[in-house]
Structure formats: C-alpha cells, structure tokens
Image (cartoon, rainbow, N blue to C red; front, side, top):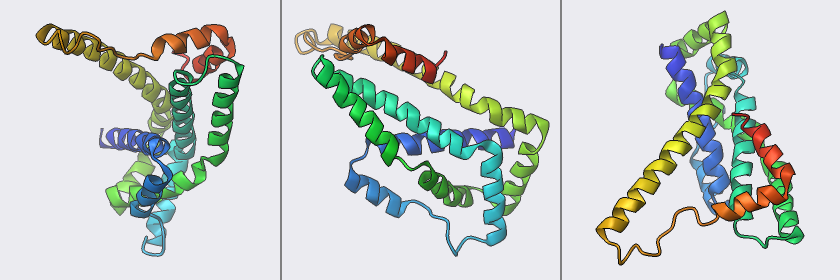
Length: 211
C-alpha cells in the first residue's frame, strides 16, 4: 500500500509540476526552477542510480510528456475562446501549440524529478519501491496509473464544474442584484462551436482523453 501511495504521489506531483510550469510567465518559471531540487554532486551516487532505475520502471518521462500534452490541450481550449473565430485565429492557436511542443523539454523536467525523489524518499524507501515495481503487480500499477490519472482528472473536472454551478446558483439567490450578470465558463460555447467547425480539434482531444 505504501508503494502504491508513493507512485500516486510521484504521478500527481509530477503532473502538477508540468501544469504549473505551463501557466507561469518566464520570470516565474526561472524562479521556480532555481528553487526546485536538482540532482547534482550532493546526491549520493548509489541512491541517484536507484532513483533513475525507479523512474525508468514507472515511466516517469512518459508521464511528464503526457502531462505536457494535456497542458497544451488545456491552453489550446483557453486560447480558442479568445482569438477571432476564423482561419487566422485557428492558425494562431496551431502556431502556439507547435511552439509549445518545441520549447517544452521533458528531459529537463525529468531531471528535476531526480532531486524531488531524493527529497521525499530515503535510500531504503527507494530500494523498496524498486523491489515493488520490479514485480508483476508493480509493473501493472505503473502501466495503469497513467490511465487512472486521466480518468481521475475527468472525475475531478466534472465534480468541480457541478460544485461551481451549484455555488453560483446559491450565491445568486442570496444576492440576486449583484449576481444578475454573473456567468461561469463564458468561453465554453465558443469552444464547442470551434470544435464543430474544426473536427480535427475534436479528434485530437478524443485521442488525448479517450474516455
């Protein structure tokens, strides 16, 4: 159970590392990178080797790249709600996505994870995780965790959206004058319209989130 919880921490923490980095401006990103734990000479070579073996077993780099792909799609949807609804607007969003993919360095983020693992797990815990993920059950957990993470994100978004709508309705009832024009997700209609006009966008989103 401890090993399973550890992998969940690794996946969720790394995903939010990617998402947070994608939403920061360049200055914030540099400050964050400067404060982030890094692998280096202070890290015990034996422990570092074990950490890198663990990262390979759990597919850490693939998980980081998947997180970046999800971040790109989220940013794409936000942009679609703000740019002109024409070919130029679509070209702008496509250009952004292509540039994002070129600039995002999955290897750099993965390298940062070495220091993060070192910070949160002892030598013995890393060895225990290696033993677990080297087993058939551990390999299945590692293979399924990416799917579980995607499904969990869908569940969280659905629950969050429902709670937000109910909270807005309650707030409007308590203060109808101030909340008369309040709306949630003003860009969603435009996003759905864009998807209808550009089927390839919908197909790309379904590929990212098959569920």
